[in-house]
Image 1 (cartoon, rainbow, N blue to C red):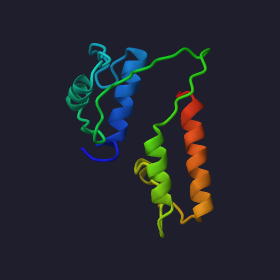
Image 2: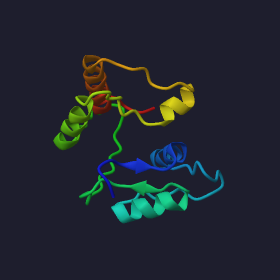
Image 3: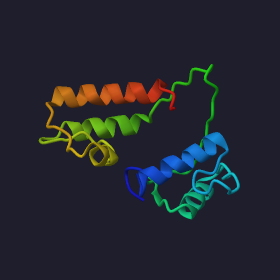
Length: 136
């Protein structure tokens, strides 16, 4: 455990989420649908079965899986402690925005240096996007 969620393979994780969302098995086209987990242990086991290791933050004890219709507005609020922890990190000298590493891998470019104001604006924009955006 640690203080942040860690996923060993973002692409495989995304395929697993797509498998749950669609009921299609994105790892084996002829395979059975992959059941949606209902506990953290089931989630870890299912993810491990498709080659994804997950490490949860310390104190994580519950799991909520939500699938909604396109006609439903869902606003997801991040935990207060996570917002405040990231803000504290962004105040440190030489801070870099904690983007998932796959962005640099796909765009083949490191993130640019940013002012503290820009770091906080990016943080606000990402939280706002996370809170309301539907995946697709």
